[in-house]
Amino acid sequence: MAALIDLSVVKSISFGRKDLMMDLLEEWIMDTNDLIRIMLSEIDQNKVEFQTKHKLKTNFCMIGSSSGIQLCEQLIRRDGGYKKIMEEIETVFQSTIQEIQKIKSEL
Image 1 (spheres, rainbow, N blue to C red):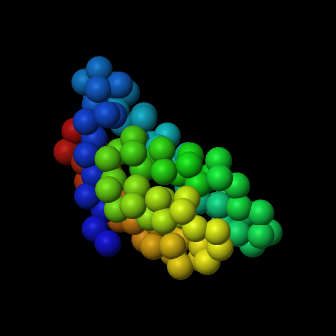
Image 2: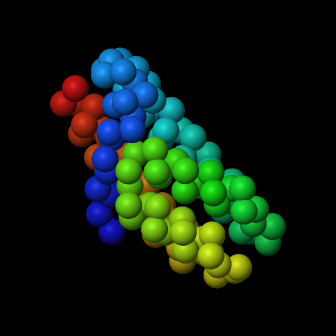
Image 3: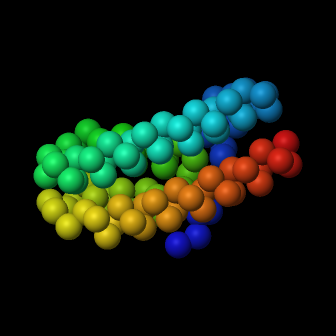
């Protein structure tokens, strides 16, 4: 899945300041990585929390990643069988990081 993103929300909340936008994108990467790790841990413990699924979806909404949003919707609707979806989410996350790095180099 391609990691097409729309940074209009990030641009809006950073008031067009490139330094703040870069900080927000770095924070997004760290926070999303943490949420993915938490989700994987919850799957391993067989204690998947709705709140974690929803936070992950919210993170993908922040950067307008339709692929990430759709995959998180699948997580939210499911009650089990999460590993395959999480593999896809990790792939989208890695592609998104590459896209963010490209954008940051152009700022």
